[in-house]
Length: 289
Ligand SMILES: NC(=O)c1ccc[n+]([C@@H]2O[C@H](COP(=O)([O-])OP(=O)(O)OC[C@H]3O[C@@H](n4cnc5c(N)ncnc54)[C@H](O)[C@@H]3O)[C@@H](O)[C@H]2O)c1
Image (cartoon, rainbow, N blue to C red; front, side, top):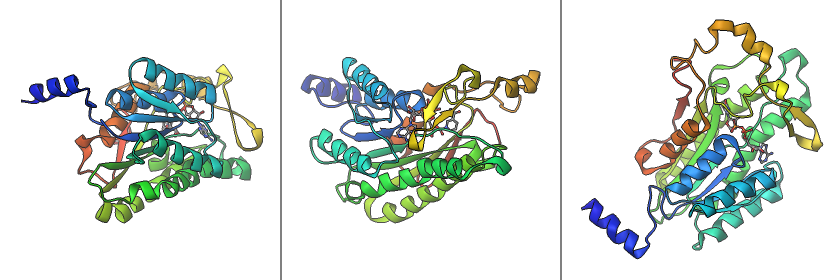
């Protein structure tokens, strides 16, 4: 029967996939986990809004999706710019063709580490602004598209980290901010679940292989507030110090790939998770059990 329906659907050119007919904003989707999520969501029929501060990378992701037959637009900008958040939401609603937005994945982020006694106010404020305040402002801006009673699925997924759940030396700012999103997530679930059926969840990654976790010596920088250049990555010395113990705290004994991380995001935003809300899913190969 299902085969017959999909045959008819393909004949009629109906949208197919777990997210068919849904519009998804994915922040920080110019590369890494977000870019993989953009591709996977588009493969499942979503119209994806690729949001990133790096406009060339955002455009490349959107182009690769459309050239593969999917639907995506790039809406580049800085999550710390209030005007951009308005543009992002409006562009998503316009892209939908029917003024609807179904999914927001708050994924944009980076780390700016320092031990507590050396951490500057600038480091603290930048990380809290990007990982907590910006997701809140985006969700608030998109409220009119989520507080609706049309019977269609709505999901918000906020990205956290094992640092946010367990703390991490050298990451007081990031640990606080990534813990903060779980409170935001649960509040959305409680405010918008009852009348509107909106699901809100948190996904907390462990070690995922992206530029955020590659060797710091590779010299990759992100541009922080005020144009400040911030080095990202994990110092090789830290890995060397672990020696043969590297990854022994991970039952699966390896970092995850961006595709594996994004697959868990897709599952959480899909109908497979239709009765799951307010939860934090650890995606870390079993670390921190
Ligand atoms: N990689 C990991 O091991 C890991 C672990 C835990 C949590 N995370 C979280 O997962 C998310 C994705 O990280 P990733 O590893 O894919 O990193 P990444 O550096 O590969 O991608 C992050 C993207 O966010 C974008 N971005 C950064 N600041 C922005 C801003 N102000 N406005 C708009 N876009 C901005 C970057 O340009 C980049 O494209 C982040 O929130 C990160 O904190 C990652």
